[in-house]
Image 1 (tube, one colour):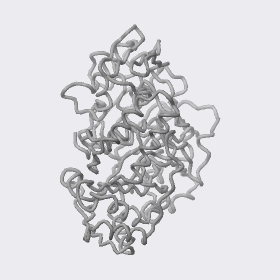
Image 2 (cartoon, rainbow, N blue to C red):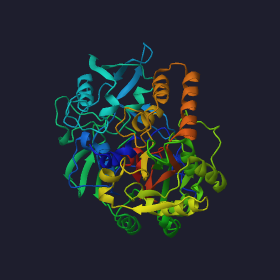
Image 3 (cartoon, helix red, strand yellow):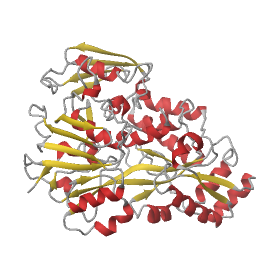
Length: 514
C-alpha cells in the first residue's frame, strides 16, 4: 500500500487527543440531554470518496468509507467523547502476564444483520483478515506483534503477543478492525451495526436503513442514512447552507467567517486532529548535524502559519509528534519560539551554505504551499536561503516524499503514543520519513511499550519526546483541527477528540428535531 492511500486512512486512527472542544459560536452539542427522537432521513456529505471504494475494511483508505463502514459494522472497543476507551462488541478485557496475552470477553446476544449470532470465531476471522501474507490492509502493521488469535471460548478471544504491550487493546479501536461473520465476504457489508445496507454506489452514494435488532439501544435513531460523495469543499458547504445535506465534514477554515453566524448552521471542532510536518532527511545535509536541524526549527514562525493558513483553527506544536493531551504528552518541555538570531547562529555553525530546497505540495497537507512560502519568508530573516519548489500533487507521495531532502507531510493522531512512534520514527519502519535511525531511540520505544509501571513508562515517553524535540529531524510546526458542520436541527452531534464526524459514528448518534 502506498503512503498516499495510508495518509487518507490516518484520521481513523486518531484517538488520544485533547477533550474535543466545540466552536466558540456553536451550541453546546456535547451537553445536549434531550431524549433522542426516532425517525427521519439523514443526508450527509463526505469527502474522499472514490469509484474504487469497497466495503472491505482492508481497503478503506478514505474518509468516506470510514463513515459508511461505521454505519454497518462495529469494532470491539471505541473511543468516547472524553478520549477514553469504552466497550463495544468486547464487554471487557484483561491480561494476567504483563500484557503479553490479552483476553477479551465478547458481548453476548448480538446479532448480525442476517440474524446470525456473534461469537468469538467471528472476531478471530475478522482480525485475521488483516494479517494474511498478501494483505495490504493499513492496519496490518498493528498486528505484526501478534503471534496467535484464538477463540478460547464461545464468547472469549485470546490474543498472544510476541512481547508485552500495555496499550494493545487501544489499537483495536481503529475503524478498520470491524467485525463480520466467520467466513463471510466483507464486501457484502454484513455487520452488527446500527444500519443495514440498502444500496452502495462507489464514489457516488450509500443508502442504509435502521437495524431494528441493533444491540445498542443508545444508537441508531434515524430511519435511514444517505451518505453522498462530495469531494469538493465548496459543494459540501453549499449543500449544508441550502439544506440538501444536514451534516458535512471538513469545513475549510478560511470560509468559517462567512457561515459562522448563519442561524441554521452549527459547527463542531475536534481539536488537534493532525500534525503538519516538514521532515528533513537526517542522513543528508543540512539535517545530518544537530545545528542544521535546530536552525530550521528556530527559523519557522509557527503562529503565523496557524493564523494565515488555518485561520486560527490549530495550535502550536513544538516539533513533538505526540499530541497535547495524549496521556504521555510532555507538558513541561519549553516551547521553541521563532528566533531568527538563534536560527542564524546554528545555521552558520552547521557549515551548510545553501540554498536549501523545500519541496511542497498540498497533497503533503492542505495549505502546504502557502505554509512553505511563509516559512521561506521567516527563514530569510535568519539569513537562511530556503527555496520553495511546488511539486505536482499526483506525484508527491511516490516521487518526492522520502526522496527529496526537505518536504511537506502530515499524520493524524494515533491510538497510542507507541503507534505513532513505531510507525514514523523507529529504524525498522518503512515510513520513517526523516530517515531517523537511532538505536537508543528504538530501545526506548520498545521499553515504553512493555513497561508495566505507569510512572516509569511515563518517564520513558518523556525522554523520547525530549530527544525528538531537541535532536529530531522533523520540523513540526502545528496541530490542525478537524471541522464539521451540521444543521441546527441535528441533535446529539458530539465531538470526539481527534476524530471527525463524532468518531465517524455521527450517523448512529444523532437525531433530527423537527
